[in-house]
Length: 461
Image (tube, rainbow, N blue to C red; front, side, top):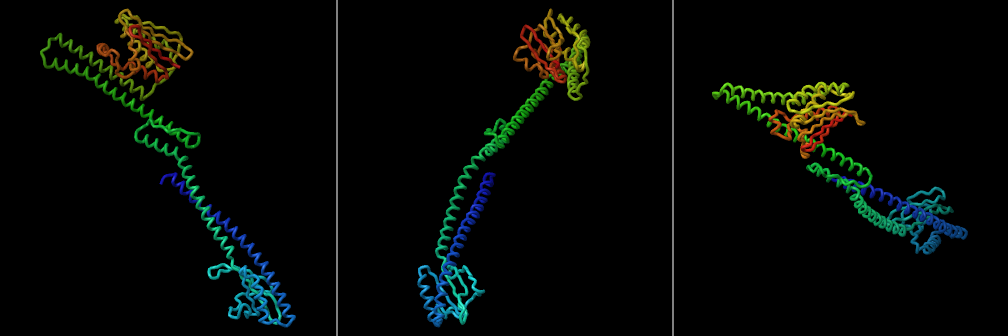
């Protein structure tokens, strides 16, 4: 059973119970009030009748005619006077019924003094009101009983019951209809919420709940939308990371294939063929070159893994000391390639790891040298700016196509794949640079234009 159905049934049940109990109490109070009024009116009539009969009895006693026949005549006249009101009188002397006849049973009630007793009885399926009292004492005790059917009051009570049933049924049906419409309207956001969650569960993470108003359901809808947004972003990131890992594995396998194949091919050639000594030396030189490339690849991967697992030790370092550690190998590489390497720094200091920062700048500058032709220039600069300390490596080499800029920090990615392999580069340098920058909380950005050069800035806050 759905929630709105439970609320509907419980509300209807409570309303019907409370309504019926309340209405019954109202109608019962009305009936009891009318019954009390009727009792007072009957008591008043009884007093009038008893007073009239008492005067007649006293008159008969004075005339010494206080006998059965005259008494019956008096009661008969009195009863005929009230015949339209359906009033019936019974008269006893001691325990002998005088009127309407001796065939009536003896008194089944007791009277103390002249106290008036009023009772409501049910006889032959009808309700009657009965009034009794001791009326007169003279050579015996005389008792009078007054009876009247409550037909008018019973008729009114029957009408009240019918009205009660009609009003109860009308109100119950009206409430059932109104409550049904209200609950359907109120529960609609919850149904939409459930539908959206079902869509998310089925895999549609783009599904969102429509937020209406500012009630608790609207707040819950906003929270679910925010949760769905976070889940979707997390899943997209997981998918992106998974794809990046798969690309890494694919690229790594591809990177291994070429040198391993070359090493195996040359080794097999030397083993199985009669090769002159000079060719053997050339083959061994090529095998050593490819082996060195594999070693560089493995060392770089180990460095990246070590950084991820162990973190780094930070200390305050002078930028000039960092430049001093990479100046000679870069200048030597520049001389071999015919490229001028220049350093510019002042008294700047950086909070970081000296070895990693040297690796960062060396890789960036090495890439710049490789991108330049003979006569080119690579500048490595450090300067203080309002946002922090900026390290910049700039060259006037071949540049990077705009569509390649966002991919160059991916592992094993090369802009010029053929040239990079010839030079023995692994394609991990910029990926390592980005990782080092991230560990230092620095932001690395690339600007490049084909045939004009490239500028890499690393901003340390």
